[in-house]
Length: 433
Figure (tube, helix red, strand yellow):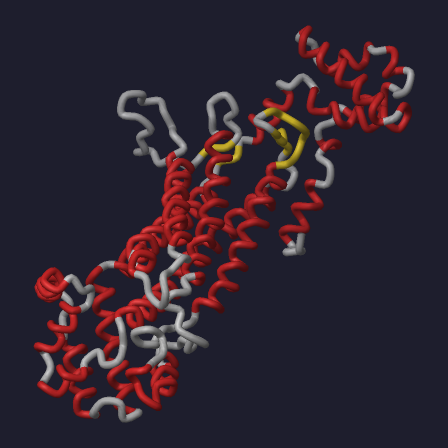
């Protein structure tokens, strides 16, 4: 991912684009064919090494223009004809925007590949732990029994939606830019639209309906798509982080024998990948905010808004790439401790079954009356440190409405996971929500 945005490969691709642009312009008579051949030969011959980049930088620093150094360096390697016609009629944003769409196409492929790895690992967790019971929690407290497969299925359903969003965004991102100074293609004469079509078509990009030099919604969408996908990774990582706490111990990251959690507390086994996901997601969200600011442009071009992309797009894309990769690794090696899940539920002394008891009682006395009765019993059991089932069994009011066998069924973990198993099956089959 980093190689897509590094100086040398980026400059190499700019040179390829500029050579292709000269070729398309010559085919429509916009520049001499001899000049186009010379430009192509010069661009292909350049070794984009440290010396070449330093040469470009020298002229850039002298002129304060982002591509003046590149133009001068290439011109030195052309004949007089080629030097005069190099980068004809195009502006910086024509090349940088087109390069960016090609680069983000490759980045998208890497991101989607790791997202699919994460999805496959999550689906495997769903299958293996469809029936593994655990406590469902709300507001940080135990609520009702669920299965771990159900929790993982919620992750899988969200990751699938993000996968779909990448496909939808791709259709809008497969567009290039060749529009000139203010977007009117004025420098390219009567064949301008044909040149645009030929140039972009050879890159596998659509020509834009109109210049998007001041319309940066495509990049804002890209940024916020990565906010969503890394937000999901962060949510999953944070859940694992919490469930790996010593006091809970239901999930655990895989760890190598050489892994070090702390250089001063040798026993530590920290949730490193889960923490990294949170850090990376914050980097993505911060840079997405910068790109949202860039939606507001002055007139037909605004360097304040546009040039922030040079920082924000590479950084957030690389951070998202690492997050997707880490998420796939985290889920693929996740340790699930079913014994701890059951032990933690049993530690609630039966309070997780309060809803089942209330619903059963509601059919006899009404929901609100049932709620008050069960809440009273639960509070008393907690206050007295007694098992909830014992408090229920001794309550004459409850026993006047529910038989002992009915109460026993209500306090069965396996019987009180609702439709978790069916919902896991539905997600695995790919059924829509």
